[in-house]
Length: 316
Image 1 (cartoon, rainbow, N blue to C red):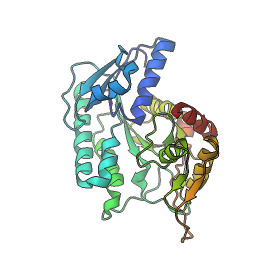
Image 2: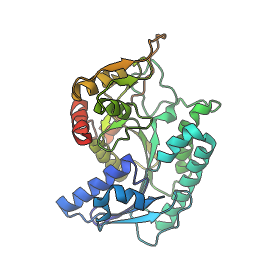
Image 3: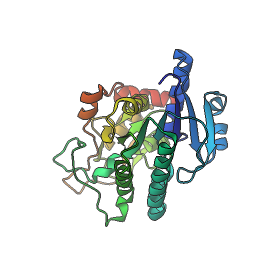
């Protein structure tokens, strides 16, 4: 990627911050000269929070929304469509508007990719496209053909991601790789959003207790954000076009166990579970990552205990 330029949507969210920090670090250490144009609805607000990025000459900032931004005149080799944060929020407050945003945004981004002659494009989707993970599957593979229930309003987010993937499949002239993202942890993870790990960290860093709003039985897995950047860039450069890859860890842990690990890392704060399980079934959300392992040599390079330690040290 030396000397190339990237167009990034969603560059001020959790994924985007890690990507920008990684590009800056690579430019400093390796002199690769990678640049990026970052689309944001409020770049000045973001840069006030991250002033060191405002000083980076390799980044320029475009104010706008993915659904209607003005096409920049600058040349771009690659495109990363990471924009998801507002959609995740609207999933709860206005799912109809969320679906409109997703469709209008991917259509406009694909139009720009065609207009600019983008060499390769990466789009972040979600494991939510599979719907509920069957109890007989410990890890869910890309070949699974399940789907969210379209008549269930709570499925709007997952079905929106499926429609994004469909739009990309219907635009084969753009070399697009799909990253079906699961759960992550690391510095900059929001501590007041819908992410259980972030909420547990918030509670623990405040002195506890860590409150689990449930019985703690749901099973998740967490990939460290530094690994995430390696995965996303590898998929962008080497993933097969018009192909989906699960992105995440396959090392499962229950939310109760995760809370206990975080509590221990933060000084043995208390953990409170608000409900007792009344079901024999366990909700699981864990990817099978063999496709990425075999085709691209990707893996969980930083184990979860070290991921938690780094996150706690940074957050403190």
